[in-house]
Image (cartoon, rainbow, N blue to C red; front, side, top):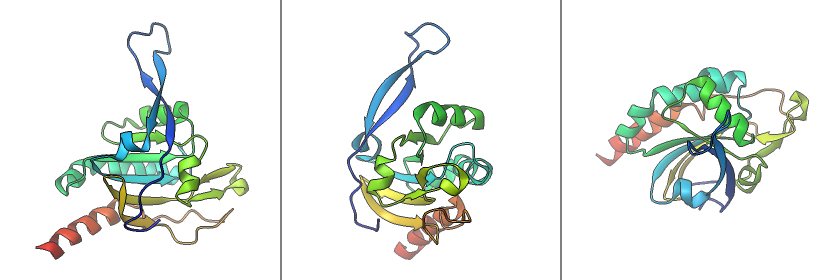
Length: 181
């Protein structure tokens, strides 16, 4: 993807808490669309190879979570973390990480990831098809800026991290503001 492109229309199958449901699993299915997440908002979307994986859990997700107020100060309404994982996994990962600010989006079938050209094979790690690591600033469903890790390829031997880091996106946002001044 590149600046100016509109995000593909996809329906995401999510699980949301519903206190009207009794028992140990008070969740129900709720379909969410690209428009539900992105219409009328300026957001950061970052995507990663898998929930509970080391780089994602140690650096990327906590970095966006802890920097949420800094991103808000730069005009960001929401921060979304996406992975080619189902809603059960994404919700448990967010819970395990203590996430309060970042919202997780499950791309369980990889449809969104495929449509934005970021679906890669990770069979070398036993993952199957997953997302290449990237981040984007999205304004009302249109890509404002795109940050993709170098070397995108099937079964890449490494997991590069830097372009899609929260520090890099915050730097970009601050530079854009200073250029406009």
